[in-house]
Image (cartoon, rainbow, N blue to C red; front, side):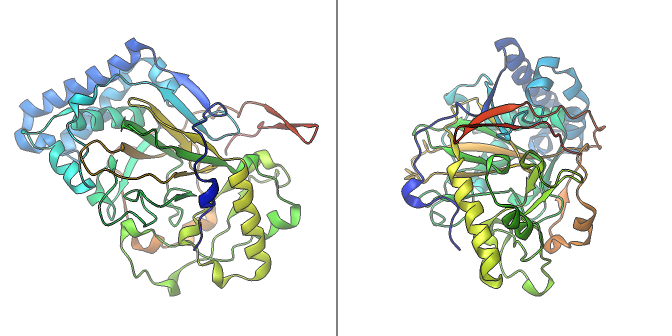
Length: 392
């Protein structure tokens, strides 16, 4: 199945001017790191080797309880993106390259090193910092079938996976996609933190609320036609017979004609488009072209966070050549559910291909969703006003 962005257009120059930016003051950023270090130290003295495991119940209780100790500025910085672009860059957690050791060759090694006293301890402390930030934003969770259920995933290039459509790839374009689009319990918000990115490898972001589609095209894509299958990080040989067709697009009730109300569920690399008719395939292709047209690229620097609204924007990665010498790009990822955004009732009928979430944190109270800021863009000489509708 083909990717959203054509290979020839994949290498956009790094450009995050269109993405919302938020600044963490040095004091606030340091508060996050110091609290993470304090919790890690407390756990070391409390339970020895078990403390190093990120799923330790005492550790998770500490994170859940003490996330409220973070400065208000931190909680404000990790709220969902507030513009039509569906993404924002948060600058920046203080960190140094030397505290993490070399980039691990795969996520398994990363997990092992984070609990090995002989390795640099910064990776585990940053895992705790990520969970503190995620708990301030909503409900962090993981997947039992992905990276052994870890709540913080390590994204590094892995030898032998260069050309697959997963976070372990490198040489191939990682097609823009909704994270875990196959599952009804997918994240509302995705948090990516950069530890290392020496070649400024870009993360692509495209918002469905910036695309231009005809009403017939939207109607076709709002009709459940084909399923979305799990990606290779969950295994293979999933039963297509039990797959449920899902809509690619939908809108909030009462706002069906407004682009500013569109939401999306999209993963072309794992969507059996050949099973659909020609009208659907053409409408889907037009959506792909539009997502390419509005694509922007964020080349994250160490300490920067990228927040992606997983209901509004797709994300991917441009190709790069891995070195496998301990200096490669290294990101950390956390999935976050927002209690103020219930899923559509129709999704409750999906089986999620048997994939179970790992959700050890208590449910967060719903909070008031800020409306999307008004964005005025020139479209062929006309002003386009978008972004007055929030999620419900």
